[in-house]
Image (cartoon, rainbow, N blue to C red):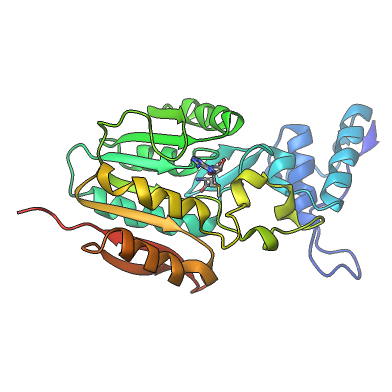
Length: 279
Ligand SMILES: C[S@@+](CC[C@H](N)C(=O)[O-])C[C@H]1O[C@@H](n2cnc3c(N)ncnc32)[C@H](O)[C@@H]1O
């Protein structure tokens, strides 16, 4: 048995960032406890095996690996999601798209919703949980990501139709009232390199081609015919590419209303596309 490392107290001398909270979360995950338990049990001891696992996790953290991959969990819209290196770690900025979608869905009894490029399932699961009458579909081209998404939906007791598909579900008869897409949107030349934590996330989830808009260009060719009148489409992208994405949308759907949504930092983060209702 080894004495439990002191990880709750704040930064060690000279560190530019307080890593104490990250270390505490790693320690809690090794012990299968939460941080409140650690605070109450500062004198508890680690077994040799726990010490080995903790040291290994500290090494991975020091090499830049995101904390969420080390603990296997991330939080999105107040819910816990399992994550592993096959999925993007859900980001707080994507929560703005959820807020918009939920406001739109309030006007429907039984809306059809699509999450394109679902990753961990964070968007699909959140919409299904917050809007229980919605019929939610989700696609991804990564089988490994879909496995994570299915596990998250099962843990939250949610019914979602997941499909391994390129952009849209294969059932061409489906029409949607709300589509949310957070497709890969980093220009290929800007993909971060190690030890940047983002470099540990799947290339498939990051790389948006030469201008970062390759997948959206493809989506906008096939999506308009799959939308119901009055549908809302929300497309997340990188702030410098939002203007170009909005122009692409206007070209693909000239009669739709478009506007730009901001993230928590006040940066342009998504394009909002509102289709007119008929009649
Ligand atoms: C930026 S991640 C977003 C994950 C999740 N929606 C979120 O917001 O956390 C993009 C996801 O799109 C998937 N993807 C990439 N190209 C795709 C395509 N053509 N069709 C469907 N999914 C795609 C990737 O595998 C990845 O899981």
